[in-house]
Image 1 (tube, rainbow, N blue to C red):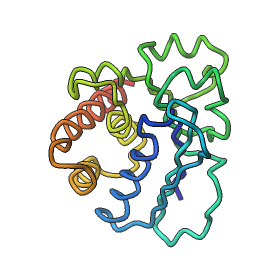
Image 2: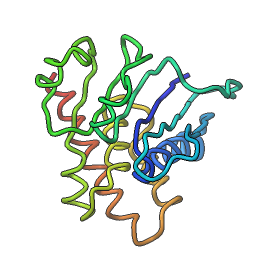
Image 3: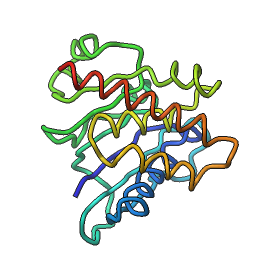
Length: 189
């Protein structure tokens, strides 16, 4: 089973990204999947978490994800409010929305031991391609490129299934751009 944790702020789409990934895995790849949020009465902008599980067999565990194969951080400032690296497996993948390079991040003790660290300036990609700083589909594409969670085509079909017609094209383009950017980084490692 693959377990993924999403760190975001209320209103920036962490749970939507978790659901899109689960939909891509279950509907378009025939796998078992769960996607669920962890938040209470928080208001827009408050820290929230989303979770996705993907497996070949039925998933019977309905608890929060504690040991992660992949962590995705939609807002870099959350790293100051919570330990976003907690529970990341040694072989796990960490994707973070930041303008800083991997080398700059590794200078910070919080990130120095992460082997599979993928910083991406998702905000800039979103501004360029969506016209707004909405980074959830950008980071979904980056996570799929970094961790091979599902096929990118499955993500694009999930976007078609779950988003309004006016949002589909731009979001697929943004997700694909991040996917390709991360795949390029992986090829050059």
